[in-house]
Length: 224
Image (cartoon, rainbow, N blue to C red; front, side, top):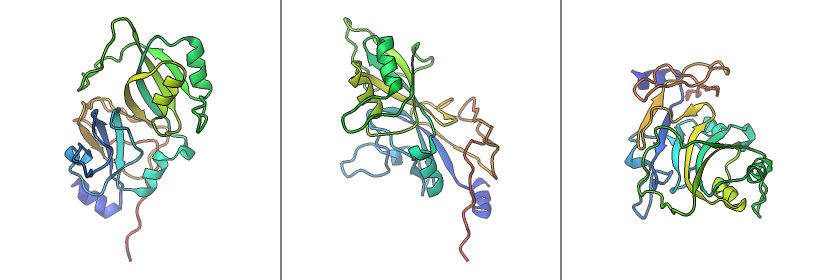
């Protein structure tokens, strides 16, 4: 029924996926490494932005090229929220440097949000696990960016002296990982022109009907 509705009214498909560690954000790989195709049996959808193989968390997929560009492009300033475990205990000075923008050599990052947080509740075990060193503490940070340069978060934290141990993208805009275990995905039902003030609030992966989001979903034109 959902697919028939989409065909009749030209609605975009939108999928949220909790990408496990080691999975490539693409559907094919000549070297046989794990890809999205190992988890998502949905044709003609593509990731809106990439997430490194050694990072975990939210990947948004869609079959709408315009929507894909709006999600991924920094021009639209859609925020990406990361929960980041770093080596050591970042100082206030280090946090201020992250927030002000970091000179990575080939670019200077935009101002962002960064703060210390407790270890996230309900955090799953990573496979393989993080290598802990007893003499060096680890700290969790929450970092919110509106851009997505190559390995940006890892380069930023290393530049201010606190290398990233684990990186989880928790949210893209209003979409979050809430209710999705690693390797799980859900498709959101999107219709019409959503109220831009509405936010996704999905308590678990099995109750995702009628969800609207902050981006307008345009109907695709039918072929004459």
